[in-house]
Every structure is written in C-alpha cells, then in structure tokens.
Image (tube, rainbow over the protein chains, first blue to last red):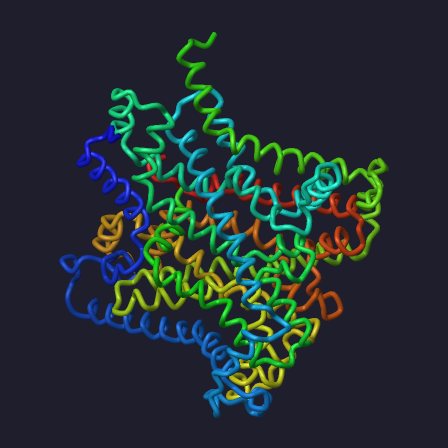
Length: 333
Length: 294
C-alpha cells in the first residue's frame, strides 16, 4: 500500500537530504566556500598590493597545509613501512624508511599467528557490531520519531533528560551495570557476564546521541507528508514505517556507520564484560597481542594494526560523504 | 484537565518513546542511583554491599593516589584541551580557504581520527620509541637527541597530549560545518570596510562560530576528563604513575581490587566534577557565545 504519491515523497526526500547537506556541505567543496581567510568577492577587491597580499596568503596556506598533511600522514607511512620489514630491519639503527627486503609475508604470519586469532576476533567483533547496529538503528529511529513528530505533554522534559544523559560518564554506570549483569546471571537462567549480551542488548533501547541525530533529521521532513498519510487513514506506526523511514535512509546510514565505528573501536566495554580470550574483539585481541610480546616484534604488531585499521578506512572511502555530513550535523544545535 | 485527543497523543508519544524510557531506567537511571548507593557501601562484589556512610569519601580524601590521579587528570586536561581546541580551529580555518587540493587536505587530516584507539596506541608506542621511533629519528636530523617519551616521567604526559592532536579530525569537520554557515555578506561588508584578516577572524568568524566552539568545548571537557584507553594500553599509568589518570584508578579499584564501593565514590566525584565544569562553561557561554537571530 502506497499512501503517499510518489513524486511528493521524492521531493521531500530531496528536501530532507538537502537539509542535511546544507548544514554540512563540507566535503569536496573545492573552492565552493569562499568565506575563508583568503576569501571575498573579486568585485570588491581593489587592485594592486591587495591582490599580491592575497596571493601570498594563499601560498602560505598551501605551504602550511602541505607540511601539516605530511605530519598527519607520516605515522601511517611509518606503520606500513615497519609492517613490511624483517624483524632485524625494524631494529636497524638508524631506522630505514623504505623496507628492504619487502616482506608482505608478515601479514600472512599475523593472520595465522596463534597469539592473535584474527578470524575469530573479527567474527566476534562483527557479531557484536551487527547486533548493535540493528538495535541502535531500529530503536533510535522509533524513539526519534516520537520526539520529532508527535506533540505530547512532557516531551520537552523527556528530551532534556535525553540530552543530559549524554553527559554522564560511563564509569558512573560501569560498576553498577557490571553488578546488575552479574545479579541477572545469578538469579535468572541467562548468563550475561562473559557473553556478548551486555555489549549489544542495551543498544536495543535507543542511544541518546543517535536519537538526537535522527530527531534533527526527522524534523526537516515536511509535516504535510505525515498529514496526507493520516488523512488516507494511515496509523502513526504506518506513517513512521512507510513515510518517514524511506525518506530517512541517508540519516539511518549515518547512524549505522557511526555505530559500526563505535563498536569496532570500543575498548573499555569489552574489557569490562568479556572474560575469556575466545570472546575477545579485535581491539582487545590487539592489545593482548601487544602485551604478550612486550613490544618487541614491531613488524608483526604494525601489520596487525594495519589489518585492524584497514576496514575502517575502506568503509570511510566507500561512504565518505555520508560520513562527513553525519559528523558535521552533530555540531549543529 | 487534558482532552481526549491529548491523552491519545500522549499515549502515542510514550509508545514511541517506550524503548528509550525502559532503557533509560534500566541502563542509566537505576545504575546511576545504585552507584550512588554503592558509593556509601563497602562492596567487594563477592559479598552484599554493607552501608558505611561517607567512609569511602573520607578514605578518598586521605588517599594520596586519588589526589595523584586527580591532579594528573587536570594536568592532562590543561595540556590537551586548549591545544586541541586551538589546533582543530586553526586547521579548520586553513582547510576552509578556497585553495586547490582542499578536498585532499581535508581527507588527510580527517583520516587519523578514524583509527581505532587500540591501533593508534600501538602505532604511537612505536613512534615514541626512544631509539628506533620515527619522532626521535626526525629530531636527530636536526641534531636533537629526543627523550624516552614514554619512559621518562616528565615527558610521558606531554607525549600523550601531543598524540591526541593527531586525532582532531573529527572536531575539525564540525568546525568546518560551522564555518560554512557564516553568512558571506558579513565578510564582504568587512572587506568593504577595509578590515584586515586578523580583525575579520576576531570580529566576524569567531563570534559567528562561537556556538560550535562552545559545543566542541563541552565535548572536549567530558572526553578529556575520562581519558582511559590510550594511557591504559600505552603506559599502564607509568612511568612512576606519571600518566595514571582518574578513570584508570577507578577501573583498577573496581576490577583489580574489587573495591566497588570505593570505585563508585570515585565515579560520583567524577560526575560532579564534569557537571561543575560543563556548568561553568554554560554559565560563561552567555558572555561569549552568540546565537544567530537570538
């Protein structure tokens, strides 16, 4: 059943997406934003020395950015370079920049190392990530709809509570959540500690940050669309499911991406709740790998780090725009 | 009295909010309350909590390690927070200039903020290596013999603060979005008035993006005061407890020494400190944050 004329829906999708873009038109704006320090319309520019000064400004900006970029990239290059060296060459003094010989085998060694079970840890991380993404996206979207599209008494207060929960440091709830999950394990047949559950079950109850993000997006979707569907006899849930969700795919993707990054990155959560090495996530596994080595086999450690970073970087390049727009939106009140 | 329609929409609203309301009670409100109760208890996890009043707080006041980690955390915040604010804003201003290769520069500066914390810790352990690390290698080109960054107490914390600058990309993106929202005619007007670049920055750009600066400041306060994973992995608080931070000691109390009550008292002190500092930020924001159209 399609309650909304297609053109209207598409137009709204465009408008909504533009809303996201306008606020966050950051990436790839090569030259589009002329409001920088060297900006200003050409029409207002007195000729002569002023032009020279602008050229100088621009050249200095270039030089600065070039140096900084090199500084930001060098650690990556150093990591990759080390990951391709032999153990002896990592210890060579003075250090070499270009590995000789180049040993791509290091990656194979790490992938098969008994000290860090890459396939298992990747599987664990992905299981937690997928469950957390499903939970976060669905529950946050539902809750955000309530905050964005339904007017009811007490909504403002609840929204203020939602925002303030973002300021509560994890350590405040860490200890009592731990004892809560322990208590549940002792008093119900279901074990929580030492399983993935404490890491993903809470995500099915909405996450404040993502609810906020989606609410901001839902508010840009014109109310007329919901009205039209309501006149056609659509229930509130139907409006959410058939009108809002299809229009919000870009924003939902942002939430999914952020959640994936968060899970891939999370260290303290798994550290507190996971107990046996066969449950480790990649983050925990990498740390365990390092502490076992006492920091000697740098070539393998760097290869392992590259392997942990790579999926994130690939994901970023696949979804660059969505990503940057999502981050940019978070900074807008 | 509420009309029928109001009850209906209240029901609908709460219906949609119900996952979060349950989650809030179960995973936030109750744990926060419980942790306050635990902070008043002797609680080892193995036995039921035993109420001891303010004893944990009194013990904390007399605990030299508590003061050490508190001071360390503030020291770190004083190094990392202003540096991060200035560097991220400076980078955003540079990256906002309409120059060739802008997209590439932006990508390069953003990339490090994607690196998972643990991987970043591994990488910087290696970069900071006194003899074989990249940083001291580069310093040696200039005839400087760099210190053992993570092995000397006086250098470990500055090293961690310096490292945190590598990951400012996220904040830079938020600033860039803010800079896009500054109306161009303001710059044009300033230019017509013959205002120089520095004055334009001071009188146009900074006031216009002050809400974004404020947002990033609050986020930075909350984040910096909780610093945990990086020092936990890289230095384990050493050398000589020079990088032993608040959350690390809290974690150790809870999960190494099983002093859950003591740890909860620390958590509450942390919460109060964070609330006070963000409160101060909010209070001061009236003087320096300008909301458009307000």
